[in-house]
Image (cartoon, rainbow, N blue to C red; front, side):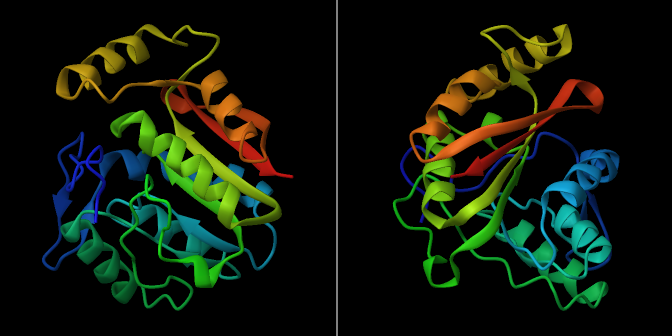
Length: 221
């Protein structure tokens, strides 16, 4: 169940394509999956057990799991139609290293996957700016709880740095997000790092990505 501060059904910020079955197609996932994979290929250890928070259509999970068959990938998603898309993509690609998607409210004290912990990595792509800040804080707390020592929290999306936007397009995007929901918005990576430190997560690496996005790698001590 979603918390009172978390939308029960996340709103997609783009028009999604639909295949004949339940599979959905995200234009942004098609654009950013290769640059993200390049970073993940470096930071995820061999045989990593990965928990993804906010898996969307499932295309990222499928792409990464195909490229790295050694990974064990557990998707999660609040939206039922998106969960159906993940299941359909997994079946269409006949992947055995992608588990069934679960429902996780990032802001909850327990995520329901504690029995599977510890994880080598928690991955969250384009999530914390389209959710209340409490959900972002919950994501950091959950990663601190469920990652093994040395495990990685990987975040991708637009971020501010030092209280300033990194590009005019990001500032405009931030304004559009807040117009949709005042609890949303582009987060400052400095705030993320400070909050992560309270849960034993240290910001280890920031990678410039296409379209003024960043990949942030935080590691649990």
